[in-house]
Length: 485
Image 1 (cartoon, rainbow, N blue to C red):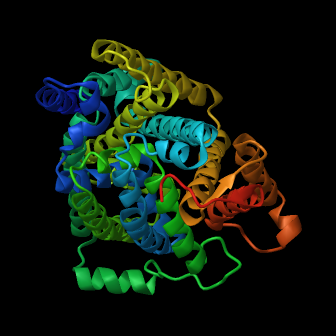
Image 2: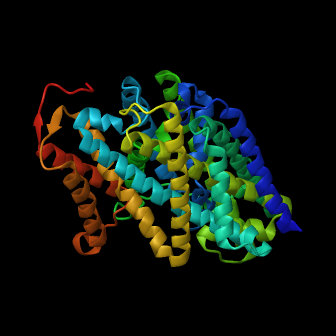
């Protein structure tokens, strides 16, 4: 009976999203799909971005990090916070001044069509791989908790979830996602708070006692001071800032909603409010990890970090709290996938098919956009099935690594365009865009031989972007006529 309740909750959740889609997509055009007609409320975008930034994988795995490394993850969050100011006051003014729908159009203005195509191509590759891996991992959790117990096979649950996402994003696009992300962020935060207080009540300890016990057990250590380690605080803070700049500021999915806000001033308010809120939300996730760690310590059991949160909720908390946890997990899953499919559709239509360069009629745009949207949904499903067939955690880690490498060239291309007045001349952008991540891959692969005990952490993204920048600088010439300056 409980399993059917969970299934009913999932479908009720979907009906709510479908209702929001129906209201927000009435009289929708391709412009509203891509840019929300530049009428999105900044405070809704700011709140909804929390759900987009914290994927289902984050929802499950961040609390588990406390078991192994205390609050070291928060060093990275501090870096994220710093990076959002660069996004708000360096990148957003450029995007608004040029009135961009696809942010990679900037590269065409500044460095030519070849740079534009490679920038958009790297985004399409990295976002497709990253989003499908996250989708696969969370569907696996839902399969374990709900679908297996009902005899529903993995292929059918995957197909159902993707069809759900397509159903409420197909017509409205960004205009719909701004509202659905707001709802889903609310549910995710509700689940987070409910789970924290539920576990606290199980501990039978007041908050002062909990904080003191976590300190005693070294579950709140914030700073890693050994520079040789991958989570050394400067690596995390500086690396986190560049992760934000590259994976938010140079990512069409994350920026698509930001540039749907009416004015630059409001978009900047959105980013700053969001960045402050993210500090608090990540602190709550780590606090949750602390109380979970104390609780399994009381029980005298050992759990793998990534299994900590779902294991305790499923086995030791009331069923009502477990239902709320499932709603929170779904709420963390959907924003990271619906936004990805919408952004990929937008990027492909604008950057590859040239909607802004070719005078397509509105009806043709709608028809082509619909087929592209469905094609990406199909691609997502095929990749999820592929990951399930391989069923190898190292493959998942590899995909995340590949997706991470692709942001380095983007960082280098945008930095070169913004920080210099030089024009790239030779060789082709393709050479630079491929050489940089290849060199970084070789360096990381043979790090133990080349660097001894030094561990490469988040600085790899910075190194990747720096190599791209240097190569662009070497093969460029100075010019006084730069279109975007």
